[in-house]
Length: 577
Image 1: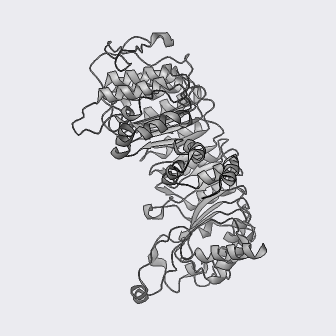
Image 2: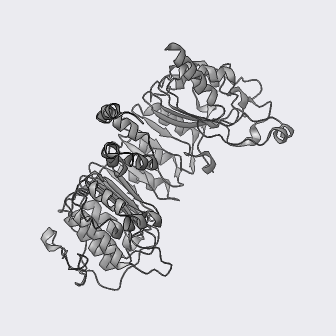
Image 3: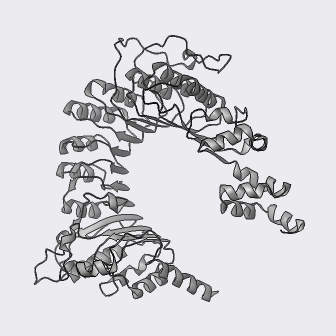
C-alpha cells in the first residue's frame, strides 16, 4: 500500500490516473474502488463509464445490492454507454431514468420468443428510456418487433421527437410489416438522424389496408403522449400514410436499408432517397429486376448529388446493372462489394472512366465472385488517390474464392509501355498473386518477383499488408516456380525496407513463404512499428514429413514466428537506452 501522500500525488495527476485506469479490467477497477475513498473517487467514474448488462447475475446485483445501486446513482453523470442483452434490464437501473451524459444505447428491444410474441411492456419501457435521455446520440435496437405496427409507430414518433439522435440501427429477425417500416422512416426523415441502418432478415409483408393520404411533417402532428404508468400511449389508432414527397429534405447522410425488397415494395427505398439530398453513403439492397435498377439509378442521379460511398449488397446481378448504378453518381470515394457478384468489363469501365478513378480512395472487391486479373492491374495503375484496396477476405478460413493478380499482367519486360502502380498513398493493401506455376521452363520467375517487391517498396505509407499466393495448393510442387516468391531476403525482401510505417503483416495465404531467422531479424531491424504478424509454418514438401511434424496450423498474431521479431526488437530498444 502506498503512503497517503504519494497516493494523493498519483491520483491527482489526470494523465497518470487515466493511463492506469485504461490498463485495468472491469474487475480490477471494481477492486480499486473498494480500497479507500480516494481510490473510489479516482476510479469509479471509469468503472461506470460503460454499463454492460451482460447476464442475469449483473441485473440481479443491481436490483438487490444497495452498494451497487448507490454506486450507479452516485456516478450516473459518468455513464456514457449502456449495453444490454435483455429488454427488461432497464427495470434494474436503481430507478434512474435519466443519465445526463449518456450518448450510446445498445439493447435488445424484445425477447426472442419462438411464437413471435411481442413484449409490448418492456419495448415501451425501452422507448420511454430513449425519450427521457435527451443526450443520446446513437441507439442500436436488436430484434425490434417491426411486425407490430403500433410498436413501430411508437418508435418512429420517439425518433422524430428526440432532439439529439444522430445514428439509429434497428435489427429485425421476423417478417416486418411494410407499414411498420414506413412509420420508422417517417420518424427518421423529420428528425436530426444522419445515419440509419434498418436490417430485416425476413421478407417484408403488406397489410390489406389501403395506403392513402399524405403526412404533415410537422413534429406537432406526431402523437407521443405520456401515460401515467409507463409514459407512452399507443392506444390511439395508427394512421397509414405514404412517405413524403421530394420537397421534404432529411438530414440523412448514411442509409442502409438491408431487406429483401421486392419490386412491389421498391418504392419505399426510392421515396426516402428523394428526401435525402445530403446522402453520402448508400447500401444498395438485393434487387433483381431491370426496372428497379433503372429507377434506382435515375433517382440517385436526380436527388442524391452528394453520394460518394456505395456498398452493394446485391448478388447475382448483371454487369450492366452495376455499371448503370456507378454511372448514376459522380466522383465516388469508396466502393465496396458486400456479396458474391462478378465485376465485369462494363462495371470496371464505369468505375474507372466515369470521374471515379481520380477520386476513388477505398475499393473492396474481396467478396466478388469473379474479376479479370488485367482489371486488378488496371485499378492499381489508374487510381492515384487509392488508400485502401482489399482483394482478399479478412479471414483466410472464410476464403472460397478471392481474386488474384496474374504476374503475366505485370509490365515486367522493358518496353511494354504499361504504367506502374500509381496508388503510392496506399495504407491498406490485401492482394494475391498467381501465375508462377504456369511459367515455361525457359522463363525465369525472378523478374516478376523483383517487380512485385519494387512496386510494394514505393508504397511507403503502408500500414497493413496482406499477401497471398497460389489459390490451388496442388500447385505447390517442390520444383514449382511458386517457391521463387517465398518472402525471403534472397528473393528480394530487402526492397521493402522503405515500409517503415508497417504495423500489420499477414502471409497466411502465401503458402510458399520461407521465413527464417535472417528474415525475422531483418524485420525487427527495419519494421519497428510492426505490432501484428500473421503467418503459418512453411509448408513441408512431403506428406510423410507433414505426418511427422504435425499438420500446419494458422498462427495468430505475435505467436511463434513473430516472437523472435518482438524479442529482438525489445532487446535492441533496451540496449539503446
